[in-house]
Length: 422
Image (cartoon, rainbow, N blue to C red; front, side, top):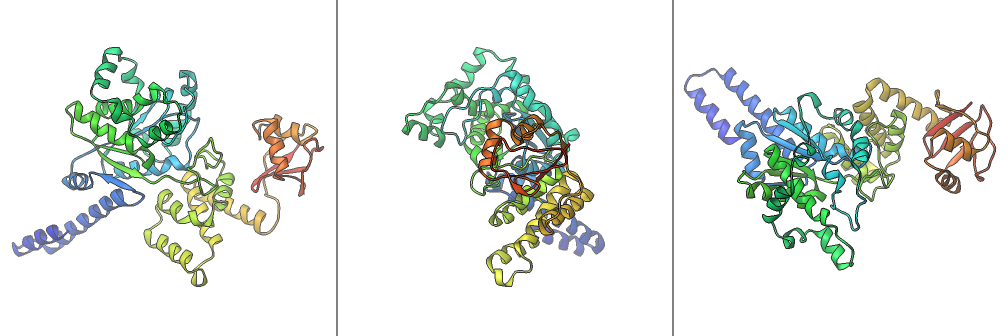
């Protein structure tokens, strides 16, 4: 910044208008703030930060890569942490490259796993990726992004390519990753495709000529491998930005659909609101920072409230409600967010029923009704919810799986799902 200030003062001495100078200074300050936002907010580590910072200031249009494997049918808020980082680069004029790993998904990323991942078929991957672009489009501008599938190049490769790629690396280097070392110590298997995975993800960066790759901290080995693969193929090494992992509703484990602690992007507004209200208070700061554009001054105020509860500007419930409103507004619109907030207040603060409830057909017993309506995945899940006292009929806890129900009854599942039986 001192460099630019000196430059502008020099221009002033040369007789140029101060209005123009101040206008240019304001523009530079805005650009500096954008760069700071890209490199710091919601960022755990940058490699190589000085190099990337210089390129961002140079005015170069960078090719910024993010790869997502369609291993599940939809995206959740955990995915948006890195998608939002891609959005920042896109809004700053850089080229967003979204790679749908339809080929690598069939292998499965070993990052963070201590056991073999079941391999997916092409049909499973195809089904999973059906909604990916639509959901990613809720965060980034899909029309302006370069969307690629890595099957574009891998379907054309043969054994000669695989031999060429693997000849540039040693098994010892690949086995250095923490996930593999842990499995070796525990005498757990490591499949050969898992060893190939980081090389294939790295080669994606060669195909799209990535200047920057984004990923979570659990992706560090793969992201650095991308740099090595590019170097072996005579390309400039990509810079890397790693974002923190987002804990799910339990406040402990990484948000994941398989763990059931997730908030889906296509979640019904009321469900999204209710799930956000159920997160542990200690997660609020992280959610505000990683999932919203709320100014850092407001987040700092929340941080101070958490540190000094007796002097808090508002209670945790109000902060959490503000977070829930913000997230529902982002993905469902402001009017919907306000309606959901009013309904939540009506149900949970005033003890009343929601004004509108989805209708499901009564099948005679709670077990049959919930399974046939598809609001549980199986009879065993319904029984588990009943055992956990997580179902109510007309305000009374259900304690038997064969308990009768009838049209007109109100069914409540968990803390925020209500249904009217017809």
